[in-house]
Length: 325
Image 1: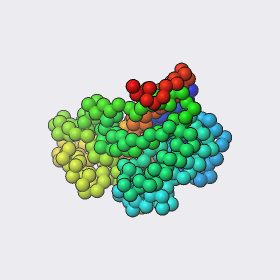
Image 2: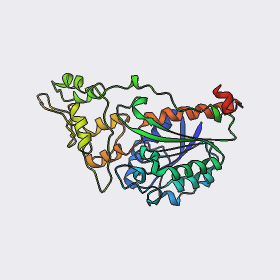
Image 3: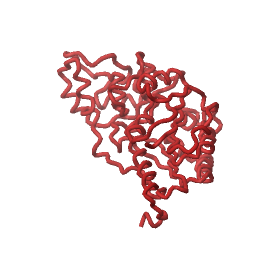
Image 4: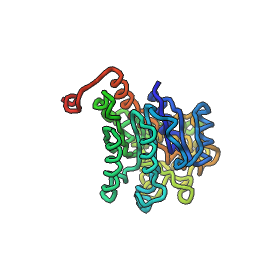
């Protein structure tokens, strides 16, 4: 059993993926009560701690196998003001504090593509250098969700650190991309679109022959039950999907025109199983889904971290150069 402490758990996308990879959570920290309630509803066995990360003490969890988190992305998002370290929502300092307190065998932190922008170079290097100075072999890479079975253009930055005293630390590598295995939106959603007997579903599925643009969740102040700004809606329209609003159910049998997506359809595009619930209101569901880390991506990275940790138990002692050669 590999143990995990996760912060900023949100609606559970990363946690679900890591659980699928074989990690057992001993603590999931989430600040917003509505997210905590959703986590408890979906996985009542998970040890949810509904608290501010600033108040979370990592010392009782010293030595767990993995410390993970999707620290808030607004400080680095192109949709925001990109204040970075000057944004009060930046929780990288708390993540570093918890790494010092917990000293996990491995670290996995994810954020938006904007974290790689040149304007954040100094801060980004500070974060990576801090992790390295705490005794970790650290890597950073931009991953495309569509390379790992997620039918969506969703780039995410993933930082992975393996502790230097782990013999298998140099065996870690990011998961290989397999975009050819990712279904189109039409193939992915045809059964859900056909639930009410829509006669035009086969024709629609053939037209929706691409992967989706990035699902946008918005915030409590901005965003609603829709598929994002004008540019995103145009991309959806090319796949014959109306993006101005979200539907309550699948199209009726005689429906004509461009169908709308339901929250369940959006969740499937994000990589969640159909059994995962997000509450009863479309606005809240869309926000939770759109702000989540796709479970299949977390699973793919988690499996590679697990391989490195198991390699340590098997006594690998290669240097990075020897392993690569």
